[in-house]
Length: 368
Ligand code: SAH
Ligand code: SF4
Image (cartoon, rainbow, N blue to C red):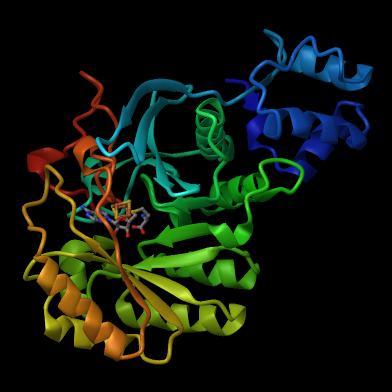
């Protein structure tokens, strides 16, 4: 399969051009057409100067060795309130991923996938229930953002303001590809999303959290916690056996110290399991001293998990205990549920005769 131009960061593009005898200065024009104009047809461009034009015409030709990431839209669903739009996109090898645009007054947020499936096996998550299929390349992550930008542009709406890596997959399990993709997406001469408007959400991959801090990655970090003791967490988040809470919380403290950034903690509220006042107090104690913002997400239904969404009252009580302990806390609105575009509801289309995504007996995989 040809390499994708969308996989290249700006400096990598300069290097590739130089390796083909094209001066790196031409990277600007190519970058602009890929990421400002968001072109899908780059050949026969009269506005490209000759060496670049030749590189593109030959490179993107039948035997040229280069290609673009242009996923095919398999489905495009709008929620009944018109505020959430979910795309199922087919990648070059036939795998599919979901991408969501969430509209708010005057702004939009894209929620993109970083893997086909996920190896972390959280019991309540539809992506976890399907198991791991493969990592996405940087271009496949970038292409989801481009797809959203084009959809907004075609609808006469302003471009994306925020990006969250909260679609299918565990971003820090695919670290290098994710960081290249984010470098491309935030590049000033192109899509130009503000790094402070990008959030990387992790189930708690400790080495990845520490690496983000060490490398000074300028994005927001969200850590999906869901439980305040190892025993309770292991029952719903199998990955916690690999990175227990003491290690995870130590990594969060180190991250906060090195970066000076606030950490966002995600907490999916499951009735009677982790939405009680006692658990809220445990959580407050666990996070003592961390500059933390807690996002509470009411459980969305998935086929493979029988836990229930709790009451609004339990959620409000949980929230007020955390706030009284000094933590800013947001209770997320449930959105896009009617088109299964809510948190944790994303999964690939079942491909007949290919793979049983539900796993044997519906059991969550633990093959990370
Ligand atoms: N793998 C990363 C990012 C993708 S999941 C992570 O886990 O953080 C994005 C968020 O959706 C996570 O906070 C996750 O816990 C939450 N989530 C998963 N399944 C859910 C469900 N059924 N209902 C509500 N939130 C869910
Ligand atoms: Fe993977 Fe996140 Fe779903 Fe857990 S919640 S299975 S880490 S996508």
